[in-house]
Each structure stands twice: as structure tokens, then as C-alpha cells.
Amino acid sequence: MKTEPPLLFLIAGEPSGDVLGSRLMAALKLETKNKIRFVGVGGPLMEAEGLKSLFPMRDLAVMGIAEILPHLPKFLRRIKETVNAIHLSQPDAIITIDSPTFANRVVRRLKDCSAIRIHYVAPSVWAWRPWRVNKYKKNFDHILALFPFEPPYFEAVGLPCHHVGHPVIEYGADRGNGAKFRKQHGIAPEEILICVLPGSRNGEVSRMGPVFTATLQKLHDRGHRFKVIVPTVDTVRELLPDIIENWPGNPIIIDNQEEKYDAMAAANTALAASGTISLELAIARVPYVIAYKVAWITGYIVQCLLHVKYANLINIILNASVVPERIQQFCDPNVLCDDLANILKDGGRAQLDNVAPALEQLGLGDRKPSVRAAQKVLDILKNGPEKPEPQKRD
Image (cartoon, rainbow, N blue to C red; front, side, top):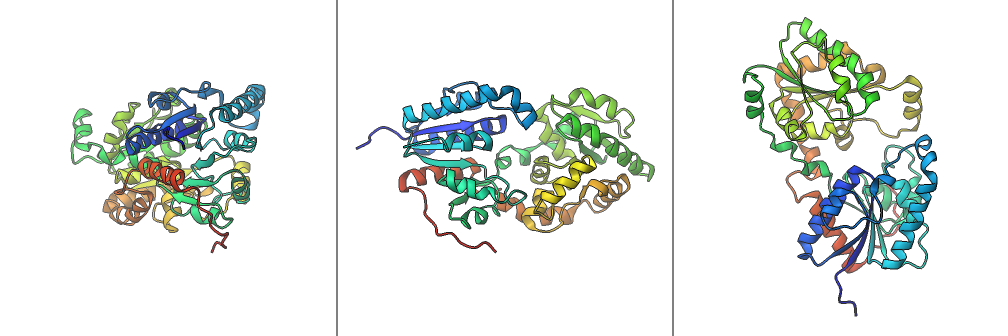
């Protein structure tokens, strides 16, 4: 009879997975009163929670075919090392966190391994390449999903999938101090403040910068007076001074992530490039507009592959156009200017009211997503994976 605490082999291959993994570890330790053990691969946050990583996580943080080819020998070697480590440690469960390329290549090479296989962060089969559900059905025993609409896609092929909530709920976007931010930056309570977020990658900022410049200028030309705040990250910080040079509203750049949510709380509205930032704005209760464009050929290919009606996650969850999203040819300064003007006219009250149900579905106001994930992992360890019959998805 086994008396040692459960042993989990965790695998995270990128910073976002390190965040998820560290929070999952913390929640598991809390739920079990530290009667849990961890081995595997992770980053500094997971190591701070007690994981001794098999090798540096950065060895796996390579994206794209062109980028991975020069690193392929090391990548394949890390797969082999991970598989060998799993066989040697004989964990009770293997939890792969996002990083689907590495995760699938590891688990499919496991032979005579009785460990339960759980994948955390469902692949977006609802958006494109829906046939991937069959690969995950073959490789894993259970999926932990971030979005409430994801489980049916996997349950349709008999793969158990449980919605645990999106980690953005735990980031603190709903706890910003707007009054403090305005006071620190000399912005009067009655002044209009627009939060502008042109992206976190060089290509995004270069594409969206001119569009946002024209949008703000048109809004100013129509008689609106406002201040502008631009939260950013280190990866694109050096690009911004040239881009915002001619923006109205005396723009202020902030790259302190602790101050970002204070800035959002202080804002009357926001203009943002599409991405997870849209969820943060919704949680911060800021009415916003989403915009995005890519090269026309990329846009055409993506449009052919996508299986969703909307781009913004809030709209996808609600299956309704609650948040204005202006993509590709609709990403036009005149249209964006109209959207912002409409929000400023009524304070965006309708959007904020309609967004609330989506945030509830994501887990806001409920148990933390990391706690829900930990509790589900412990339930699977205790009772084993579910064995549902494949069902047709509506």
C-alpha cells in the first residue's frame, strides 16, 4: 500500500505556463496541507514553489517552424530526457501545461507508464484545426479548460474535459486604484482618460501604431479633449516614443506592471490590440474597443481556417457582439473614432452590463481558477479519470 504523498510530474515550456504551473502548485499545496510532491520542467515561478526543473525551461520556449529548426537537436534531446525522467520517477500523474508541441511529443512516447495524463489549457479547437481533439483523445486522460464553451468539443470524442476558469481572473485587474493613479500623474477627476494598448509584440505595435495615431487625432479634431495613458511591456518599450510622438492627449508611457491596473481603473475607455488584454480590461470594468490587422495574405489564410464568428473572447463566450471589434478592413480610424465617441457619450454602461455574464462564466466571483484546477486534479488522483461515452456536439 502506497503511503507517500502523490507525485506529480509537471511540464511547462513558456512563461505563461510557468505562471499557471506555479499557481497550480501553490493551490495543490494548500489543498493537501503540503502533502504533495513535484518533479518535472518549469520556470523560476514553479521553482519558487518547490520544483527542481529537469533542465532550463527556456530550452523549450521556441515558437514557429523557422525558429525551432536550429534548435531541433536540443529540442529532441529534451523530449528524450523528459520521457526517461518520467519512467524513472513513476509519478501518479503527468500534468502538461500548454506548450502543446512538446507536451504531445512527450506523452505519446511513454511506454508502460500508468500515470494519469492531464493537459492544462485546452487547445483552441473551437477556433481552428478541430481535428486536434483526436490527437488529445489518444494522448491524454483529461483536459483542464480555461473557457466554459470548450468541454463539449472534447467530450464529443469521449475525452473528459473540465472548465476551471481563466487565470486572468487572478491577476488583480479588478483591484486597481484609479484615484491614486490620477493623483500621481496630475490628472483631474473630471478629465477624460483613454487607455491605449497597441500590443506586446514589435509587429503588432508597428501595425497598430499608425491606426491608433489617426484614431486619436480624429477624436481630438471632433472636439474631444482627453489624456492618454499607454501601458506597455519591456519587449516593445523602445518603439513607443516615436509612435506616440504626434498623439494628442500628452500620452504617458508606463511600463510598471503593478501600475497597469491602476491606469485601467482610472480610464474612461480603452483602445486595444486584440488579445488577452481584452479580458483584463473587462475585469477592470473599462468599456473598450478592440482593433487588429495583419498582412492581407495572413488575414486571408486565417479567415479560411477559423471556425469562430468573433475575435474577442468576451464576444465568443457570449456569442454576441457586445464589445466592438474592428478586424482587418474594418480596422479603420474613422470607425474606431466613432466607437470611442459612442462610449464616451454614455460611459459605456451598456457594454459593462452585458460583459458581466461572460466574466461570471470565466470564474470571476467564484473560487480561484488555480484552486478549481487543483481540486479537479486531486479528484482525478483519488477517483481516476472519468470515462464518458462519446457524444455528438450540437
